[in-house]
Image 1 (cartoon, helix red, strand yellow):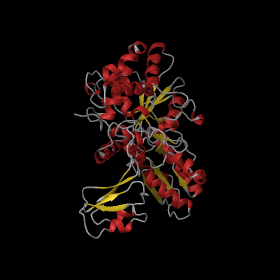
Image 2 (cartoon, rainbow, N blue to C red):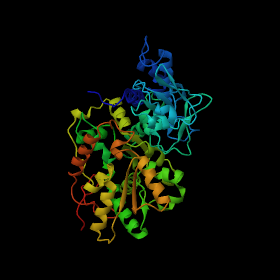
Image 3 (cartoon, rainbow, N blue to C red):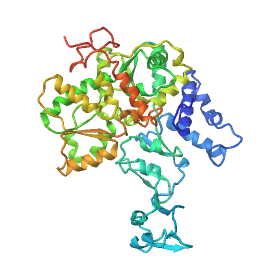
Length: 487
């Protein structure tokens, strides 16, 4: 059974798995140079023009898999060597052209860029302004526009073409680190840096010197990701990897929902703060609305704070579907709260690199949060949690939400809010379509309906109600405790 959605993900995984395996044995320095040859053994190329190009790209992937260059703090980078210089914003006539005699496309073109040759429409690219009027005029929809997948994927409009090289380039002032370009580039030329090596070294040090414990913070979307093992077996696998315990980030989501409900009732209009890509988008593209962003930290940050209150020696590694979390935890205001962030893709490489097979382990429970905390991972889940918190605390305030499924819908809502035309009083912003279960760090995001079904089944297993504002409802000693009813 194929594990990942694409072969690009498979290649990324193979590089990460090799690095984990070498580091776990203390052989990374000696074995680093052999990784490209192991992944691209040759003698024939299978993906590019030659094995030397393929190996050079793997070398670049190894560099980014080890954290990338320090002079570029952005999480997402373009591997210039891998960019195929795809055509950009090009209007062209497809085989669907019937050679009609109406020539509506020709008549619609304001610059005379269309001529008729051998009864077919032909576009002069030197004259074409890419206005799309010909495309709208054609009754057969025979004219279409071809755009680079990375540019189409980036709703923050942070990607353009370098005029000198023809390669993709990122405007880091606009980039939200959502990772949609990483997911959509067919050549795998856009990559998110990995900090998995930091997590492996942290686990090794913890097992050796015993001076601190390492905890895994599991995002709720984890319930939607694994088809070869049960969730409880994945938890057991993480513990075998060296994590002291696995804590649900849904705990922090419960706290955030309570606080966000009170803040919304107090201010009357709010945009959510749970999705770091959405928060960054508001700050960069709609700075006048930045004051309306909820003052709450994300569930990841709140859960990490809670863990470190419980265990003063704790180091925490967030595991989730989100590339933007890699940017969030490194922000100055959150320094020292979260120690590392890895994605579900990287977690799979961690377990396999260490030779751990979760499907062969006895399952362990993950039962520390409420139903409402767990459904944060899907589109609309935050709004439902906020409504629940308002009702639970008997706060007389009616939520009128604008639930944004992806950054394009976020942009539309923010434009209306900027113009004073938004009817809603709460914008739930999710940069990834479908919410966190569609994140760019997922093992699979192609099966949206199945992912949502798995998440909801997991959420319904939650014991008890949501904890109160300072987690006093955690009533069993230790970190792994069921959520209890308020005393």
